[in-house]
Amino acid sequence: MLRDGRTETLTAHVVEREADKAPGSRGNRAGEGEGEEGYGMTLSPLTPQLARRLDLPAAAAGIVVTDVDPDGAAASAGVRPGDLIKKVNGRDVTTVASVKSALTGQSGKPALMLLTREGADIFIALPSSRS
Image 1 (tube, rainbow, N blue to C red):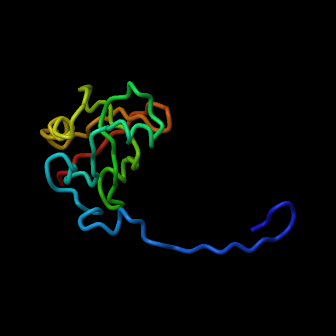
Image 2 (cartoon, rainbow, N blue to C red):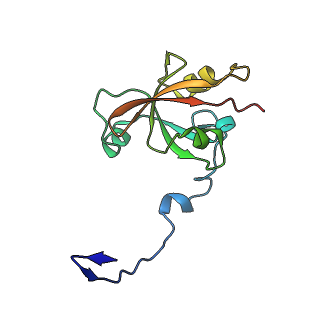
């Protein structure tokens, strides 16, 4: 690494995060209230603690993407952990079940999601999980 014109050597230690060590913490995409398995993303209700950690305003509403399967439809569409899902197909979503409901019945059409990422609202077209 070059810093102020000098070469510096850095040492890094790779460790497993505590959250990744917990049984079922990664890849647990099944179950009501925990994820949307067909799209490769894990979802969580927005809590005050999560809102603070993600630097969201107190009045923020929606569902937080907590994990994304790198091989899933959500990752290919550009969905990232930390994104706040506000709407799916024009419908406000306030529970994991409401996201699942809005995503079902797409009959092969992409779902349009309104997300908040790093303080900006963006739209992402999420391809259908059905092949």
